[in-house]
Image (cartoon, rainbow, N blue to C red; front, side):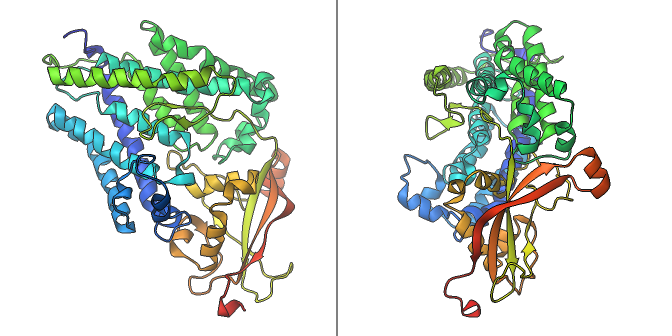
Length: 473
């Protein structure tokens, strides 16, 4: 069955699988280290409460069958272990069927996490990792050549990621059509990186070039993915360069990295594949059946892309097999940040000794320079950005966060960079205030050493204490 396999993409498959294993590892590591405070038994949005009201058919997950923090941790760390084994090449050491099962394990475990993760896992790159990870199950190992149909489906995913993002921009904020969005975006994006200050201060004409290049890469280049080589390789290479530019300019979890990984098997890498036998019939049947299913399910994202009311980052089935993507259809002109502060005073006053909590990734102290975290995902920091956009985004979990800070909950404090209160002396009151942040100018940076300048806007949450606490009465 020479038509079924494409030996010239042997190296492309290898680098794709290694990249996918790295992203799985980052995703499971973030889940293992953050889940207790977010969705654990005593978390802000506990899994047991979620599975009690949402049926299994709507959110397929192992945790509908059983949940405990210990069991969740075991699943997350097992995902880390399997991902590390795949990165080390374990799938090449076992038969084809076993390799497929090995790739199925992280997909099933991560699906179980995402489907009970609620707001904390409502990001487009969660579904993207699951969709790409499901296709990774059927790419095979060293026993067979990479299946042509699966390679095509990977390009189809990449096309939808880029083209969908391009359409959502052109249909959204007018600044994309005027090529002015990047005059604001580097400053107002959810989590700036260490170079974002410099990107923001690029000359305006260069910002326009950035925006125009983005439109070309997302609206024109995706069609070239299906052209003959070397045109397809050139298109993929251009996408990779664009994504690496985005990696340098901010922290977007693994969104940019998984797009790079998707582009890798499109490239016609120099390779010397070993001779292989024809793919076994059972494998051909399984791959073709799954491919037919995924193509049939693709009607939903296609219809969405063609719609004037295009939705972004939406799953059309509970297994996240085929999804729609897109980001930053609207770009903020002003950056707001919610600053959490606590005091040990019995009676909170404006002149009380308010001490500020420091987050790992989101802006806080104006003198603290942003750090690089992607592809690691700081979920609380990202949701704090949404909270600053509107309190409605935080209504389900913000009260729980404040309550846990008042308790000095160790799992919650581990999500932060620093708590201003010792472990045995929690604050008596917590308040939240909204500030406007802007990047300083070159002159301000030289004079003050601060990369941010912030201005008080309004109260976000008045001083709050634990209800019924004797020590606060």
